[in-house]
Length: 276
Image (cartoon, rainbow, N blue to C red; front, side, top):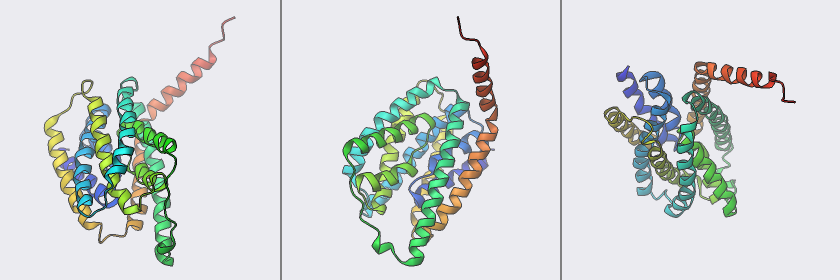
């Protein structure tokens, strides 16, 4: 179903343009369940697609003054170490296990996105946005650990990590929300490129499909960036979180054999008597 898959590629760009994240959470399921690629190939291709698409989005935010290069450089440099290590570590993990981890990440992202959407809606209703406390910087070791964690997750399961990077930039680096979204896109782009490089050599990349898919996603992020001025972010986050729950449960269901197999192995190991 290449036509459907390529059409859905626009959703990836729209998500990144509207929310500053979520693109990779859409990319891998589309590549696996619509276009029929393997899990590892899809994760590698997803990193390339999200990397290029996020770079275009970051350029748009830079033109509007919503990108902090210093914050992106510091946070991104630490995250890159985790990203490359996670991508290399993925060679030791089966594709089914990666998808199970991916589905878990989707459900966690859905929870935080729904909660943030409710908070934004409540603030807008009470007109209390002017009273939101200013963010402050956390100690560097705390920020470095967060960046390493986000990077490792990016490399291992192929998520750009926008739903983690944006709050980390607000709470740990001290950026305002708008600048956090723009800076997040640059960090996502760098992380994704490093993660993709980590997959090269042990997955086959269909460059033709990758090029077409990426071009459509780039068109989507340009449209999403324009539409972000006219769409309620709170309502969009709540709707997107519901979609993530559906997709996360679907992926868990499709890979349920990996769960039962792991459970059977654990039971068998527990039944083996200890050596005397």
